[in-house]
Length: 164
Image (cartoon, rainbow, N blue to C red; front, side, top):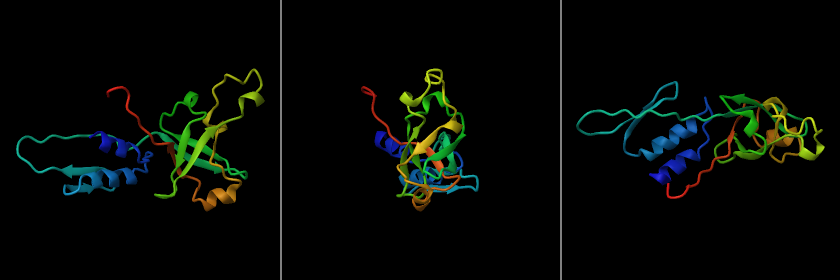
């Protein structure tokens, strides 16, 4: 079960962009009848006797969309969901462009040594942050598949804590 959960947590699924998650869940249900609707809900019906049980959960995650691709290749973000700004700087992210071609990046802002004393400990707004994916310019970002509206999620990862 831990391996299945770890696998499912590794799939990007920004709100409104849960197709990959839905396909991965269905793949784990090989041999079980599944169906989905136009809203993206997934149902699996397990054969058996006795009372029915419903398991309901989210497939989506908090994240961002690309709001702007700067001339220097940096990406500007628009937040989707309740992403806390105070925890964003230095977060690793994944820009979802195509399965197998996603782009890794890091949320950045003005470096600490270049920040004035009165700015050093102020929480930076999402609009003032950027994602550095290592692109030299806008053309390079677009050639990698990044577009305005591309989903951006926290880089997937999980680890065990103690015996749990």
